Length: 190
Image: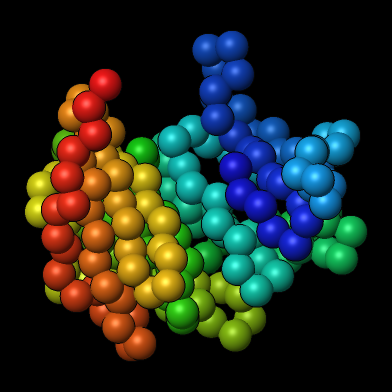
């Protein structure tokens, strides 16, 4: 799921045991409630364990069951345009990974690949037309191979791994988009 400019978006995933290509969006009211869902432009293929990231009037669909990345323009009504293919991920499959936009780049952290779980951090620059540039491996990777979720706040990356215990990491992000080392904050149990 992703939220952008007062609209909540969901797409793909697993519905009663089968992966889907459905796409829906709904308005978010000022009090935080979500309005009625509207069917939008379906994904060109089924997707599961992917990321959906908004940025500057575009919605980005990253990885999951395959390496394909797509983007679509977000209209003033909250609806989106057609999904357009853009730069593919360096891994043939990347799922259950952290993904976020920061500055001029879109990042992925860790995740499940076709050969196992990875610690790699990839990034791709945003092009002026909304497409993504070539994905590259950053010089900083996660301390261990993990499946995780990630968010950025005030220039600090926070990543939480899956599992019991779950481990939390943080890392500053420089103005040029480089990640400056990854430090373990602690573990979450329960």
